[in-house]
Image (cartoon, rainbow, N blue to C red; front, side, top):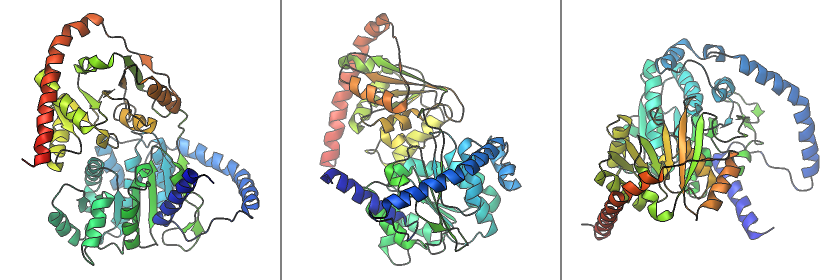
Length: 464
């Protein structure tokens, strides 16, 4: 086996052990063929049953029909969520029965409610101690999930604790000591709390573990922190993994077995993958703008949008440039303090600023209904990142548009994105006169922004 494939297999094995869905072992090479044939016959035998289940799920028109309690249905209605989406129809019933869930669906399809509703309904039956742990790869997504839980959980006096980096650790420790019902956070900070002292975090009664954006969490960078967290959780728990991208590391878990919550009977995880022949929603208009790389900045004079950059420095320079041009904007990237990041997000949500300039820390999970345009100022290197970026608009059935600015150097990247997404982008035409008229002002603003950005970088390095 080549070294690259060997390393990849080892990573998948480590992640499977970290999630600890079961103690079951995989078949050896000698028995692989017989196990494969047995699996094929089982799939054939159960195919008709699965088709019938899908037809029944498609006919479900309300949350009440899924088994959701009236108080939760009312809470959902108060948030203007009245009809379950495909991922919710498929995953809420088995989650309420205690099944391990692996769910894959496009961004903006309602994955958060798919795990929040079963957790809150079960919590209402026994609201004591730390009931659920929800892990996310980014701080902003953690806060957004907390907002949704807070809105849905008012009927049970829900206590939440968000544990992410960039915020006073002592304050978080005091909140954890009060044993909140739900802990939502990033793996690194929660692992820090667990390792800080014995008994700092009480996780022995946890009933649910959720990995949101599981494709990002099940990577080597998060593995050490996940291992610390998994060792502190009881094995008799219910695990739910949700993602827009079902990777090999996630699918490797579908053949493991685990007893249903409250039962000793082993069963394989319930796996549901929404139809993702096209990786983006039909209500999203996708276009590209081919321009020379030296005049890329001109097209940023636009309506209220989210602009994605590949680097923090680019985001900061672009923010300074747009401010100089009189365009109200805010930035969100990892060089900012957590307080500044939350302030920028709050300003954009409240429509105090027209433009939010972000790196990929904002590409996952941000749900801002007013966003109707996403611009890729830099073409993402990974097609999967493109899917998450453009998923910030055209959410929950709304319309939206995405424009990817490309130069002659980015053609292959755009072609790879089109192949991965399954959609050909249309070219966006911009009047040349508009570009020429703006060039002088934009170029002057860019020179100032680059100079200011360089001064800021030097100040950070010297600590002044």
